[in-house]
Length: 336
Ligand SMILES: O=P(O)(O)OC[C@H]1O[C@](O)(COP(=O)(O)O)[C@@H](O)[C@@H]1O
Ligand SMILES: [Mg+2]
Ligand SMILES: [Mg+2]
View 1: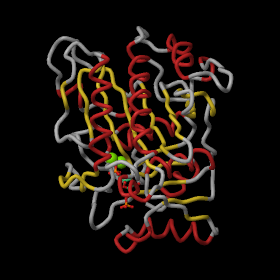
View 2 (view 1 turned 135 degrees about the horizontal axis):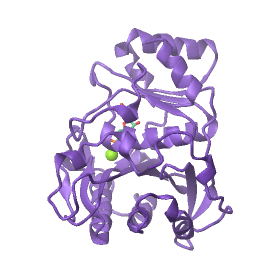
View 3 (view 1 turned 45 degrees about the vertical axis):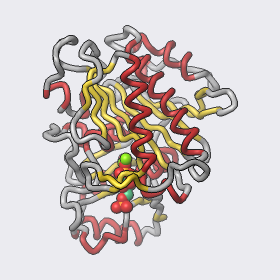
View 4 (view 1 turned 90 degrees about the horizontal axis):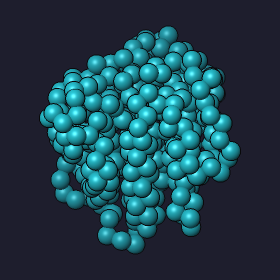
């Protein structure tokens, strides 16, 4: 298995810009240790469900999917109609394929059994950036793919569900922005695909994405700064002394994507409201940490703890999240 390290240069298969996602998946399938087409099918199913969600996101103002449904999820957040709808779309697509044994979702208290014969476990944030749905600001979907540890056919075990991020075999996100993009890794670098609605297909637009080692953008909700640790406050002062640019969309996927392209750091530190940070390890941080590392960036808890090495103990556990350009994350950690 290719670990989450940089010894992958030799195995990247160059693909011309404009390659259709389907072809790209097929051409790269043999890189994967368990190459039998199942992981490829899972990536296709995620892409398919994202096209349906994209269609609904694009006309959100016209159809009755704005606003809350009146229930709350595990995080105590008001569930938005689009949260629930996206959760249904991805669950259905992944259940139909047959490759997925269980699904962990932000919108479900416990994991959902899909197919006992499935060899994979998926963790998903069906709709990220829910507070931005009704105001037409970029939102996303985040996903992680794991191979189950217990033999297929048996009921799913805890060891299949609570896996470290370093065990991911694939991860990525969909960004529903001015254009819709799918960005993912299978441990062989990061590639980005742009959706062409009139053809109903994703095409390779950002091959072999590399996160700049350094940047001048910091993303953090400064409105909460009164309850930040001194170390975070000092790091922010350092950014301001250097006249860095503050950018915060409030959708993790969108803030992460900008920093992936331009260089920068996104921080969600411990706060009075969320002493362990707000973001969830299993379906937000692990996936973006894998993508960041595969693109040459870094992801930690702000104190030198690698996100991908955290052993999960709960489906909805939170962690402080410092992710972005390698030198910026390392510099932020020095203040801790
Ligand atoms: O409003 P805050 O506290 O800054 O939090 C914003 C963060 O919360 C999130 O919206 C949490 O994700 P969900 O929308 O999936 O719950 C992130 O996308 C975003 O970065
Ligand atoms: Mg989220
Ligand atoms: Mg969400």
